[in-house]
Image 1: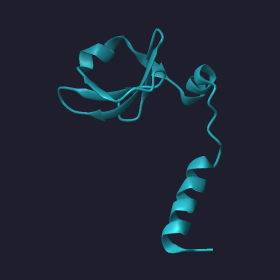
Image 2 (image 1 turned 30 degrees about the vertical axis):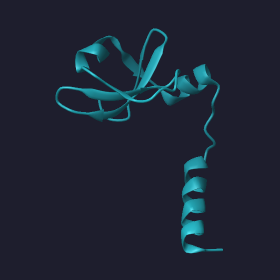
Image 3 (image 1 turned 180 degrees about the vertical axis):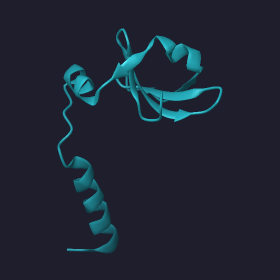
Image 4 (image 1 turned 135 degrees about the vertical axis):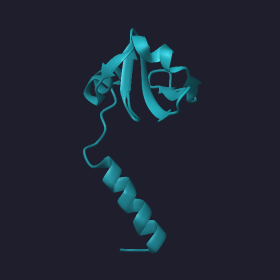
Length: 82
């Protein structure tokens, strides 16, 4: 398991946000609740999951260049580039 991994167990799909020696910060991708800390042993029953699989389950399809567009908008508004 590594940072930003998507993991699934049954109906639960989580993303790993932070890993420490005794705990892991995860966010539930289905319930969209606040991130929580769990013990690593809790995630032993989870298996790897892909972004494509998550998109199919949630019905949310990220736009191809969405991140770049948001970044460019931020830069343009911060530095008034036209």
